[in-house]
Structures are given as structure tokens and as C-alpha cells.
Image 1 (tube, rainbow, N blue to C red):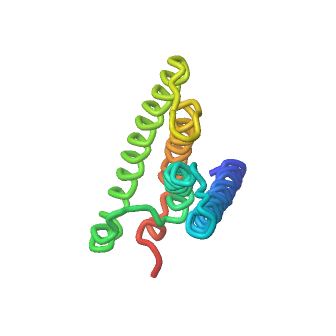
Image 2 (image 1 turned 135 degrees about the horizontal axis):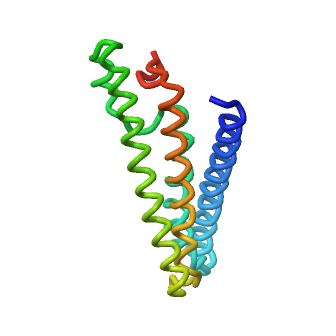
Length: 166
């Protein structure tokens, strides 16, 4: 595995973690401001529910590649743990390829939805109005990144990472 690829993926993941943390902090501040404003001053923050809605979506999406890289994504480790290393290795590799393929397909469909939404000029109209394709861009990018991460895991092929911590 070329170090430049690994270093680039690590840097991207650090940025995504920081963005996720900033989103969660921003949501906490806005929700607190909304609750205080509504209860103490009769002045709610009208777009706080939308910020929370899209913030939760983005925080779940943006953190996924980092969790995958750390081996903390959803997996069925109990099956791998029960198998001998000789049998588990090929299953882990097959799982990496299958997950890379699924991620690539999802990235493709997200890209198609992004392009269609952009060309249609679709808008999300709530308290805040913005182009619908803004919602699809992170999904497209993250599924593409996850495709690369699964391929990196396939090449790296560490069964110890697949078996998880201790």
C-alpha cells in the first residue's frame, strides 16, 4: 500500500471527524439557544429543527469512513471470531470486496441523484431554502471514500483488524 494513499485517506478522515465534531457542537449550541430563547424570551430559533435534521444526517454520514478505517463499523465479528484463521481470511477479503462494490454502487446512485437534482433545479423549501443537491454531495463523496477504504482493507488484509480489539 503506497504511503501517500494511506496518508491522504488518514488526512481526509481527520477532516471528516473534525467536521462531524463541529456539526455536533453547532447543533448543541443552536438547540440550547432555541430552548432558552423559546422558554425565557419567547423567541425560538426557527431553523433549529432543520439544522438538527441535516446535522444528524451529515454527522452520521461524515463519520462513517473514519469508523470503517478504525474497524468500528457495523460488522458480524462473531462469525469471523468463531472461524479458524485459514477460513476467516478469505471471508474477510470477500466481505471487503462485496462492501467496496456496494459502496461504489451507492456512490454511483448518489451521484446520479445529485446530478439529476442539480439539473432539475430542485429546492428544499422549509425555513431555510437551498438546492436539494447540497444534501446529496456529501453522500456521494462519502460512499466513494468508503469504496476506497474497503479496497485498502482488502489490499492490507489484516485479519487481526477484522477480528477487532482483544
